Image (tube, rainbow, N blue to C red; front, top):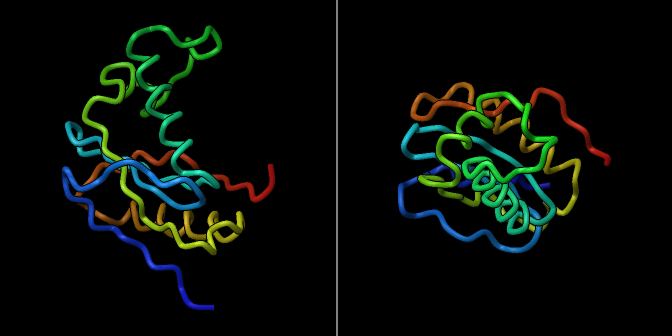
Length: 132
């Protein structure tokens, strides 16, 4: 099987709305030069959800369960919300409909994120599930 190609060329202003369907994406927070990588069977819905979640934290309108959450990403959204956040499609290859393949690609990209030096790596995921 041919390898999945990744677009890792993140230039400010060149991201945008994510397509509906499976894929791997990056969230770049430009003011802090932070990078988060994720996967989803529907990258459009996932990114819309992240934007809403971030804005609710900044506005203090999140649900009670979220009040005590801590961590680098939560702290970032409490201060910034989705301001300065840009989304990039790393790959929308149709083969990424396979959850196991998406997770394997995400693992590889998290390793890359730890090695690269342009952005602050804020990927906190260390365990990977291939079933829900």
